Amino acid sequence: MWLQKEIRLKARTRGFHLVTREVLASLPELAAVKVGLLHVHIQHTSASLTVNENADPTVRQDFESYFSRAVPEDQPYYLHNDEGSDDMPAHLKASILGSSVTVPIKNGAFNVGVWQGIYLCEHRNNGGARTLVLTLNGE
Image (cartoon, rainbow, N blue to C red):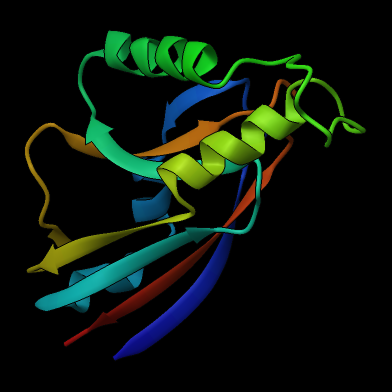
């Protein structure tokens, strides 16, 4: 079985946001999959996806703190700055973290660790709504 759909996530502030529930809510077809994979791709170059800790919100705050220091804004060596000081750093962060994640499926549910969830990593101050492409494959 193959299924592909797009979902639109509401605009969020800069930071790391759990979107696991939104992804699951958009896939009622998941219940019929005994074994499979869900590939989640973000159609943007200034936001990214990752899988990480889903319980303690300070982890998400620490992610934002780390990436803000590791890839700072307003650097004189950035040539791409027409869309604001947060744009080029957002592209770099998105490339470092990646534009997709793949989640294993078992018996109609995500087969991930107890403390794992899917993050939308919003790297822009005002990134706007984001589109995810969900591709489900399984039997």
